[in-house]
Each structure stands twice: as C-alpha cells, then as structure tokens.
Amino acid sequence: MILVVTVGMPGSGKDELVEVAHSVGLATLKMGDLVRDETRRRGLALNNANVGRIASEERDKHGPGVWAQRALPKLTETRMLVDGCRSDAEVTVFRHHFGDLFVLGIYSSPETRYDRLERRGRKDDGADLQEFYDRDRREMKWGIGNAFVLADGMLVNEGSLDEFRRAARATLEHILHRERDG
Image (cartoon, rainbow, N blue to C red; front, side):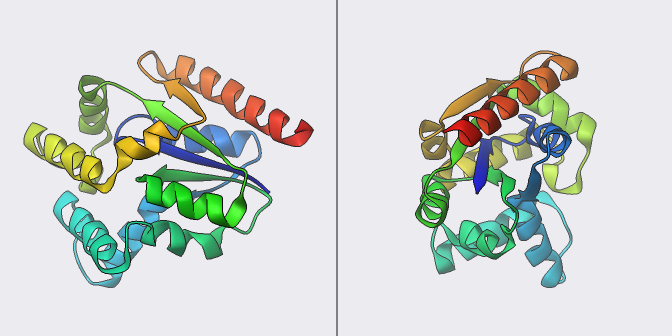
C-alpha cells in the first residue's frame, strides 16, 4: 500500500492537495470528515466550537490517536492520501499499521491562512480573527507541531493556486514514483 498522510494547519491548502491527489489516482480520506460526522451524529451544529469540542473530547476520552484509529477501517485502497493528521500520536498509529508511509507537511503563514479561511467560509472555520487564533492554539495543543517535525517532505503554499497545484502534483508524483520503485 502507498499511504501519504498530510499535516497542515487550517487554510494551509490541504483541500487543494486532496483535489490534486485525486487527479494523480490517489483515493482520499479527510480526517476532519470523521470529526464532522461525529458532530452531526450527536445532533450538533457544524461550527468551530462544536467540531473542536468533539475532536478534543474524543481525544481526552480515547487517547490522542483516536481519530487515526477510526480512520484505519476506511483505508482500503492500495494508493491513498489521508488528509489532516493532527498529532505525532496519529502518525504513530498509521506507521504501526502500515509501516512505510510518507508524511507530507503543508505550510502557509497565519496571515495567508486567515485570508483563505475568510474566503472559504466553511461553517467550522470560525467567525473572526480571535476564533482563528483560538483554533490554531487548540490544534497546537493536540500536537500538530510534533506531527510537522515527523514530516518526510514539506510543501510551502504562499504563492498562487496554480503554483501550489503544480508543486503538489510534482510532489505526489515523486512520492508515488519513489514508492513504486522503492
């Protein structure tokens, strides 16, 4: 199995990377969808506060790798990208079950990310700059910085969308080629 796991802060470009992954033949799973599904299952509105609370409560109750554990049964294709790893514990879960994988970090500055999130307007993104920073702090508490340290490669997403798509495609093709020949 070829498994690519992404780590990146909200607004860094992970959704765009998912689109590029589809175009190079990777199946995808968004870990955030697991959290949003659980939030809906509990009958809660999809907003930053509820999604964040559910993500944290489940980590507190079941351990920091809970969302990766819940992703495992959904990883059924031979070439997959898992979007949105949030901690080194989640990376460890994937490494334990799949051995070799490629952790890909996506970096964008806070200013760039905030601008993107404002334009995106997803309900769970938060309403203002304070919520943006609160969300960043929450993700840092979960251990996203530790996951970044484990990255096997990094994409910097500070330019145009076309530049990022080209860089993402080249990176994913390189990973796929490396894994196929490795």
